[in-house]
Length: 157
Image (cartoon, rainbow, N blue to C red; front, side, top):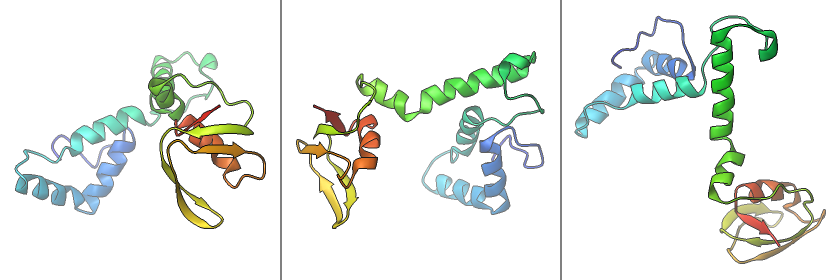
């Protein structure tokens, strides 16, 4: 990997992963494969930098409460972390697809808007698009309904 020094302190998750791949020589293998496929490089540096931005490491010990800290570096990191939480959360992704109301009560009727696989007591099965689910506390997938709902797989009727 060009521009990466495994002896330097990791700035984020990307550096940590890069150190692992360097120690196990996976970075060399990735470069060889990329070149064999006609690419200039394997793209590891780009992924490393992106991961460092998404999950940066704190550079010094500070309070977890941004209101107690008068440190520009910490406030910048805290703001970036909050932006990333919003940017990469499931709730944010579902909000981009279509506005979904908050699910206050799980019990009720739902329509499947996108087919998905799940495991029922009888075994694995596919719930097909258009299926109506009558959900109550005894429904086998009761605990997973909010997850399916916020992923946009089902819609409350």
